[in-house]
Amino acid sequence: MSAEEGHTSPVEQVIEGTATRGRKEQHSHTRRSKSKGPVAKEHVDTRLTNLEQGMEDVQLAFGRLSDNFEELVQENAEITSVAKEMIEDVGQTFQKELKELASTVTTLKAFVEGELHDLHTKSISLETRLDALCVECRSKHATSHAPSTSTHPTTSGTSNIKVPKPDVYNGVRNATVVDNFLFGLERYFVALGVRDDEARINHASTFLRDAAQLWWRRKYADQGENALHSWEQFKTELRKNFIPHNAETES
Image 1 (tube, rainbow, N blue to C red):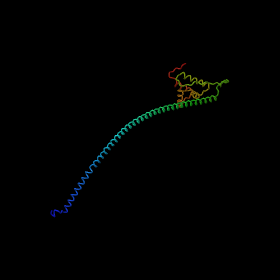
Image 2 (cartoon, rainbow, N blue to C red):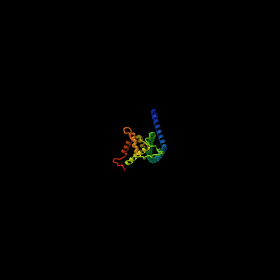
Image 3 (cartoon, rainbow, N blue to C red):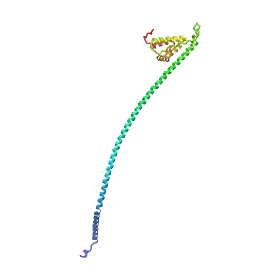
Image 4 (cartoon, rainbow, N blue to C red):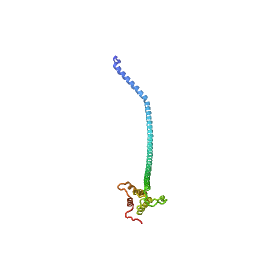
């Protein structure tokens, strides 16, 4: 071998060193790969097993969630049904109580109206009685102060005779009843000595009842142009209002 062949240049030495290191590293990498192969496969298998187990757990949880959801839906339907029934019951009860309340109010209203009507009737009756008392007082006063026209002495005890009052007239439309009522009044006035027309009219009105009393109240309220000034006018108006037309007086 020549000196040139036994001596390598620096460049060649670098190239050869690099190639040698490359071969060593490749060999070392190959050895490491062969030594780590079983460990990596076992690690992958473990992860796959864990993943499969996790999927099963997820499926179980999803199944339980589905069951719980169905139970919630069923419970919600039951609650809705019960609530609907309760609302219907409450509505029916409310309607029933409302009707009972309306009936009670109607009854109470009728009762109050009846009481007011009774009070009004009693008030009219009291007013009529008061008028009668006033008329009677005026009549007695006029009689006691009127000069005596009798030329005959009064028999002892005659002034103590009690004159019976005539029957009341309630507005029956019958000629005989009306005439008998007026006749009884005139006999009563004669017995009491009542001669004044105004006193007779006022006193006669106290014996009117029901329809006749209502007629007199209206007549009395219209005192003015239609005022009754004489006893004959009173009798005429009473006959005109309560004796039917073409009626014949019974004998």
